[in-house]
Length: 492
Image (cartoon, helix red, strand yellow):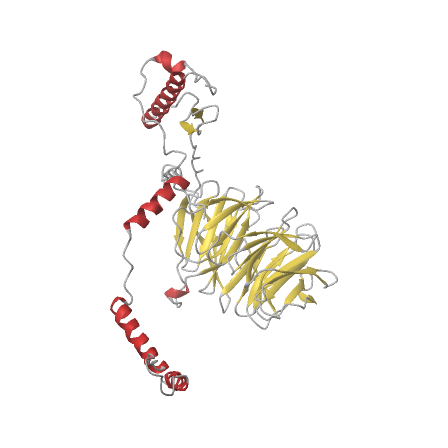
C-alpha cells in the first residue's frame, strides 16, 4: 500500500494542470491512466493466470522437421528392406565397391545384397547361429558423394563372462569389549593380531586365532575414526575426531609423535607402502601428507569441497586416491602435490574405496552405486550393481580370490564377484543381546593377510569374524546369474 500511495502521489504531481485552449483535447491525469492500464491488464490476463499455453500446430511441425533434419538425416532416406536371399552363391559374394560415376543399377544391386546380408545375420543371431565372421553384421549408411552408399561391417557379438564360483561366507566368531561404536580395523603384517578403534576413545589389540584381548591403548579424547599399522616399521598410526594424528610405538605401546595441522576431525588415514609418508583426511576437506619421522607436513592437498571420508595409497600412480562427501574421487600426483584427475561419476558421497591386491584397478562405493576404475588415468570400467542397492555403503574390501565385500549402514554385508559384479551371497548381521535393532550397521571391514578371514566393525559395539563355508559346493550353492542384455547397462 505504501508503494501504491507513492505512485498515486507522483501521478497527481505530474498531471496536467490548467485550462486548455479552445479546441484542444484535454489530457488525462497520470493517475487515471495508470488505473486504466491496471484495469485493462487485469481483464486481459486474470482469467488465464497459471494456465498452460496451448500448442501451436505450425510450431510443432516446424520443431519436428528440424529434429528430423538435424538428428535423423543419416537414416532418413535409407532404401526399403528387401527379401532375404536364399541362394548360397549370393551369400559368398563379397560386396563390390561402386565408385562414383558408375552404373546406377550396379549400385542398387549392391544395396540389395547388403541389406539381405544384414537381415540374414539378424535371423542367424536370433536362432543362435553365428554369422559369417562369428557375430552380428551391421549396415553402415554413407551419404551420397562417398565411395559406398551402403556397406556391411562384421564383428563379434558381446561376450558376457560367467561369474566365478565362490563359497558363501558364514559367521565364525563375535568379539565384544568396546563400549562404543567400533569404527575402524587394521591387521599387522604377520597376521597374528589386529587392532580396532571405537567411539569409546580406545584402541584394542586382539589375537586373531583366539579372539582374546591383548592390550588396550588410551590417549584419544574423542572417537577413533581410523587406524593403520606400518609394514616397514614397528609403528601404528591412529586418527580421531579430536583432530589428533598419533604415532604409536608398538615396542613400548606409547605415543611417540603427534602430527598437528588438521582444522577439524580426522576421518581416515593411509600409509604409503614404499615411502615414509602418512596421508590423512578429514572434515577440513583436505588431504594432508606427513613425513612420519620429522612430523613435518609435506603437502596439504586441497580441492575437495566436503569431508574426505576415504583414502588409498599405492606405490605407483596414482599414489594417493581420495573419496569425499562431495561425491567426487580425486587422483593425486604425489610428486607435484596436486590432483591430476577428478572423477565425478558418483551422485552421492563416496564413503568407501578399495584397491584390488593383484590388478591395477580400484573400486569406489557410494549410496548410488559401486563403481570400478582403471589406474592410472581413472578410466571408468563399469557399475558393479545393475540395480543399485538402496543403502549407504560405509566400507569395501577385496581379497586375492576376487571376492569384493561391501558393508552397509542397515547391517547388510554383500559378497560379490569382482569380475562380473555378481552378488553371490548377502548376510544380514544380527545385533548382540541388549542392543537395538537399529544398531545393525557396518562401519568398517577388512580381510586378513591371507584373505580367508573377514573382520567387520559394527554399531552394536561388537567385532565379527567371518570365514568361507567349507561345506559349500557348486551343487549346493549354484550360480544364479543372468547376463545383462547389450545396451541396457548404465554408465553412470
